[in-house]
Length: 426
Image (cartoon, rainbow, N blue to C red; front, side, top):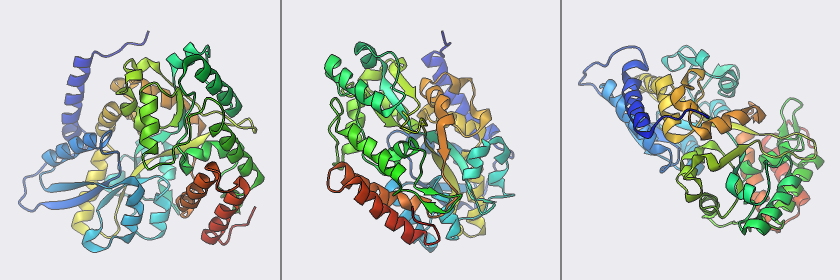
């Protein structure tokens, strides 16, 4: 049996850890100063499940760096990239929490400051190499990975067992069969899907295809393999035992509530929802949460996007604000800060030395750590993240029956060609 840390002991350890973020996380000691520099940090994390942890870290940073104040601003994830690109002068933040696939595009546009040789990158060699690579563009480092993540099939072990299913499905066809069986035996829906482009990527990877073939400079989102993958998704979401597709503005929240409360047995989700899931009635016993590699497609392969967030520094900051921003990035990506974040938010650290005993007892983190090997890094292509917008828009039309898979993906392919004129069509 895995040794668990008692709640009281864990709370005490977290308190000590937070105080250590400032005292031992970084070299140097705070200096009293009447010349205070105020930097702005745009935080794209979930305001309920994640941001409170970051507010605590910001407060600790300010206590140990009296010459710096941090204006911690929560910005909706769906708006942050466009707002950052449009911001100018004093409206631009000094630090942005950027999704890993934003980094290349923002760097190409000249909006980010390189971090090589700066205080922010002092511990770069202690971070996981593949994550550092995702933070580079054109040979330069533009971000420090704060968290990493991957999509997985998360499931209710109790409902699966009640339906007589002993293991998670290895293929989409197995998931379809399991969903019908769970519905029949338990009354709960066997699976629910959030119709967003990012969540559909495992269906492409299951056919061993991506939106583009970066190495060969080809657009592949409209290829036969991609059509096959999305057809598999379309077949799944209309199958018996699968929850009706929720395309409303509250669809994501509704899917999460249904899963947390035991009305849905499985979903595709990432570790950023661990803390939220564990607050649900169905997971009062954290051990009831199963985390497995996403099912595979007809290619025999299974995979999900290797994601996460980098802290990046704006190229538009002046020297004083840039220096303060780099110090803040170093603090927020330190071993102590990452351990604290992992414990509080149940998210995966990016540093190997942050996987401490406090982290290793978290069942959510352990589950996702085991499936990280199935992650596929996004290509270092500046335009890649922009492909998600047309892909997501047409995916919704495809799944709701407004257009065929072929017509929808052809439209996405045309948009990709507009963004990538040097890439060959399928």
